[in-house]
Image 1 (cartoon, chains in turn orange, yellow):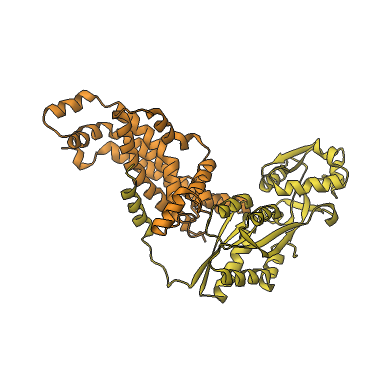
Image 2: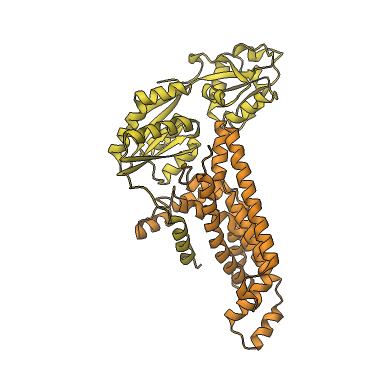
Length: 225
Length: 253
């Protein structure tokens, strides 16, 4: 009998990370395409860093940051009594950090491709900045944003290296599908590992196809005014 | 960076689940991946005997588990696949030296493909000319490879075998090489062989030829549940633990 908890945990991590990454990635990309400030290239490099670092290294850095002696870990525990290590929140955080650059890069490219004259035209017609962003910039950048979302969702669903460092591998609590596959294969249970591999492949395929179909057909209602 | 609002949203998203009445304490045991079946089985036994104590286990490479403990991960009991990592934690004062026990032992064996007539019947035979490829773990990073090298050296065939050695990143890979016939023989732990069909044990290393292969168990100093952790450790080290270990092919301390 197959244990479904890794699948449910993976979905929860993937969907939670998706929401955070979409919002943060869009805002960060927007800010970085329109604003100029000293040290911008360094900030840009930092935001993309998790893409080039091996995930285990990212995980180790997160572990040090979130740990009892790390600045973030000490702050969270002191201020809120929250401990992140070995919880599903840590898995979400690992997925967010590792998959964020994919959203950020796609969104940045999308915003850069938006013709600023169209935005200026909207402004001359009296639209405020928020309205320009929501009704002109965002709809024009939408395909790129969706591509980034799909990529980063797929990446966070498959996240292993950073997750195993900060969230541990606690069956039923933090063991997502990639962790389950790795440890089942390690224990020699190739049949169960194969089943999970099929499930996650089918799941990722379904999500990607669904997102593609949905975005080709329509943009969200509030964008079609 | 606007971090907090979405983060709280995530907390809300991932926190919405109901649970049965909470047990009095939750113990976390960090165990070497090779002990997965043993610890999982013992935990479920412990749960039926002590319904007021919940035990959750996390599994991984011993070195990674050690780093997590060093960084303050909430671990109460640590079972490592090598003494080295417990030594390091002990030097740092992070584990209670008085609680340190040997949980289990293991043996080093030579394996070959069942269908192949390799003519290998002992460790010494690995030096024979008809044996062309031998797989073992990379000694620097894989403990099984480190032990294998000790055995080969004590038998005086280290040089002869080194010339035909294929170094793998972990024991699973050694077994895969043997299973697919890419090598004539491999050196692994006895308990690893159960995972693979079509591979059989042709020889066991003489006990005196290598340092004892042991899995140390230790309580983490910072654990807030010291008494419960002690009781749980006593259960693992007791007759139930020994019975499960023996059935899974581990040797007993």
